[in-house]
Image (cartoon, rainbow, N blue to C red; front, side, top):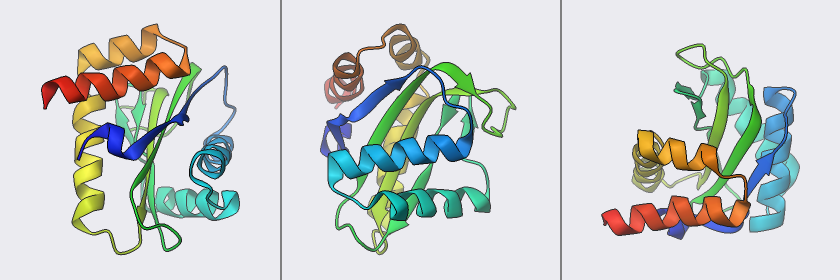
Length: 153
């Protein structure tokens, strides 16, 4: 599995500012609806429900919100770069500006975990973070996320 398998170019965005975690989940729901033809409300509710189990802010300005949906049959990704970092209850208490959300089928099991591990490994790389933070263009961000990983394969 590669990031290019789970992340469509239209699922990558830069946002100027986001006022809350709930607003962020609404933005992710809108992206999921546009890129993957998913129901916005279903995505929002699934992300909020999962976040209720424990924050998905993993530190270093990164959040990896994820949820399972019974309405999909493949893992889908969305990437957001925030120009103004958002308080996300991250483990290191730092605000986040790089968000990679994953949606997986309800019965995805190991595929969901593989996708989460892949995204985590990729986005936790310091060079990757620097490149993502230095670019605001969505197409460039998608290329950075997909090409860097493809070269490493």
